[in-house]
Length: 229
Image (cartoon, rainbow, N blue to C red):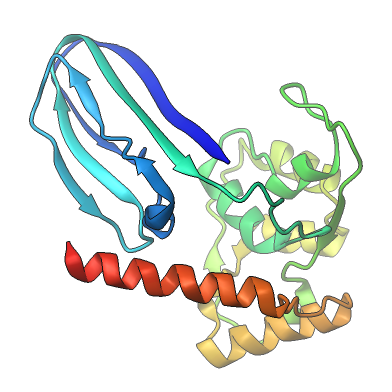
């Protein structure tokens, strides 16, 4: 089937503003593009396109002061088959929790928002969330850093950690220290992830031959296109 893709984004800038947009169709879908979704601006300004390390088409723009419009209109072909759905979410709560505590005044925990309804979002169906983050038993011998939580924020931190399932021992530790995943070597990180997956019974999903063949065909077509451009 054919799908029309595009957008219209209108801004009102008080002064000239640099922008980096990531709005184009991903290069892996290049063989499916029927009508390219070229980025256009109004008023017209120079656009410097490039592709980042994740394969996204990006555009550098300096938007002028005042009303500024970004738009695109394209068509892509799609099989209509549903995306592969992972039935369970595996989330490293403790690793993200440390960063959030340091970075956010509100001390919100990402994994907590996945487990319950929030003011801005209500789940329409049940999602099983697995907490596979770092626990105290996992951090023995790892490098520690100061948590950065000041005395004024400690009560908020304690309340947030309790709400999101931290044990008393973990709360006591996190008020003064944090351990991030980048404290692990590559081998340690792989072993830790494998251990967590095994512990929770998560098995590798291997696509069938049809899906693998289609992915290989798409990758081959993309490689040919990339060489051509």
